[in-house]
Length: 350
Image (cartoon, rainbow, N blue to C red; front, side):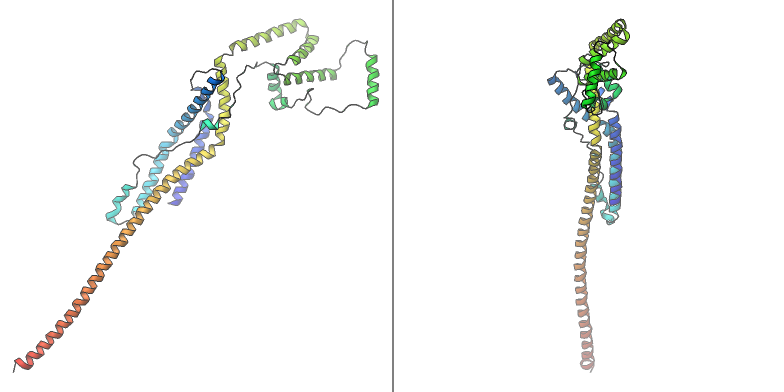
């Protein structure tokens, strides 16, 4: 029976782990069902988050119950009946009906899924401030990635800044610069690369990208002219205005829920093993309790039977004593009968 309990406990842990992982993957649908009014004010937002925690916890719990509880209850009750039937074979025939006292339960077995989303997602920090999808920072993060964009240094180098040249080279470069003061401005490809990387670093270090935008606009003006630059700027401004005007409370709510789903999914995946182990422990405790109650009943019946055996032994001893006394009396009766016969032959016949 202990092997049967261990096998069932392991099966419950596996099923709960699979079901919880599937529910985590569908967490966005559950969060979208939350329809409380949204407002970006901090006080209202805190209340909104608390209600969302309760909604997610109750939703996940109800989904897990609908998927697992009925099947688990059937398995647990089946195991309890099997234990009762096996244990009843150890009892005498007139006492086997007492197994109904132990199994099945008066109410079906119910599993409790303790997720505690309120404490689990207490460190969630939302960011619903407006961010232009075609802004310089967003574009850099989109093309370079967040990790690479964070590694940019002040002048746009992801590598260490080169060491300065020696004094002799500096003097030679100084002479060249004096000779080229009055010459027309002509930047080499390396200079343009350095300038563009400096602009990217300014864009990456500033949320608005003002300095970087000015530098990029200057480079674009030199290459494409002011007309093309004006058209591009107009389209860019129109896109900015469109996104800014359409960034309503509904858009903020969608962004908030997306961030919440990402955060809650990571946190919930951390407790999948803990939750499945907790559920398996509930099943193990239920079956172990039933097994212990059955063992207690068997022990009580054994004690009762031992008492009955002692009573029968006492009665048997009493019967043996009566039989012994009866045998003695019988022997005395035979002796007296013989004495009477001898007396009769000796005295009465003459």
